[in-house]
Image 1 (cartoon, rainbow, N blue to C red):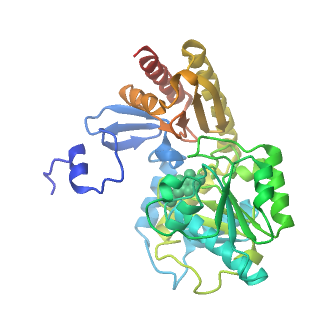
Image 2 (image 1 turned 90 degrees about the vertical axis):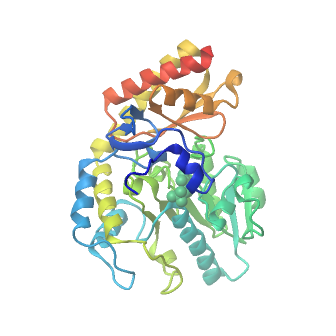
Length: 404
Ligand SMILES: *Cc1c(COP(=O)(O)O)cnc(C)c1O
């Protein structure tokens, strides 16, 4: 095996074709920089899709991983463990929640949230209260339940009969929600800033009205903070800046800073519906993941890092405005904190991928969010030098697209 040529071609031979990865194969990273097999260096504005909140190989995470890696990796849920209890306590202290359930991904956190919302509603209000309302363009994961709650049918079609009693309305459309919500609604599920759907912020009035409608109909408000959570928008969780508190919140992506972990947070009264044996996960809450996540959580949940996100947002916005003043390809730069989207104007409709490809040629990793938005989700502690160098590369990438 050791002398095997590991190339991009191998992907097509041995991997299921559900992804279409880039030609380059990164082999190491440090901070907001990554190097490929040929030792070509890239600036990372993608952060593993909003996962690497402290960049690559942050010393606090490496040391937590090494330390726990020599102590204890895995037990089972027949026993609890110290890192899980410490992390849960810190999450409870820092949020509205009283209780935490650990799993391994965002999809699993949402799966737990939706199952809990159904259980709670059935326990307290009877078997008819099962409707879940979610939003078009929303994204909640790829398990069959979560992908069906997600607002893009192209992702959930083609797998046979779907989980039922799930309805979708347009994001920020209060009248549409009012028309469909009733006492049969068990939960309204939303991202407090749509990520995959195109970096779309909720109107402040809309979020408050959703909360009121949920209260009126005794439906739970579920915030999917898998992408927005753990400092991404400049608050520990995005709900904290919205003046609205959810009943259930899900967190993953940045929670482990690159190590797989997910969490569902809720109140004691709601958590009571997940009685012994009603839900579970073999790896969920394992000591190794929780030790790394605890280090990530401790590092991010400080004024220095959270305020730093707002400062970095302004570096990006200024840099992107300057690029746009020269090349005029963006209609607006939207989003919050370090979850930003450049929305392509009329002239470049459908061409977000061209900007991504041109960026790779300039040794810069960016993301897209749909066909019309170039997305940035970099490390929350990216340095000024890295931002400046990355934006210089982005400007050259934009020039390539515009001049081609
Ligand atoms: C990425 C994402 C998910 C899915 O997380 P996985 O870890 O891929 O299962 C769910 N919700 C939102 C908002 C996301 O951005």
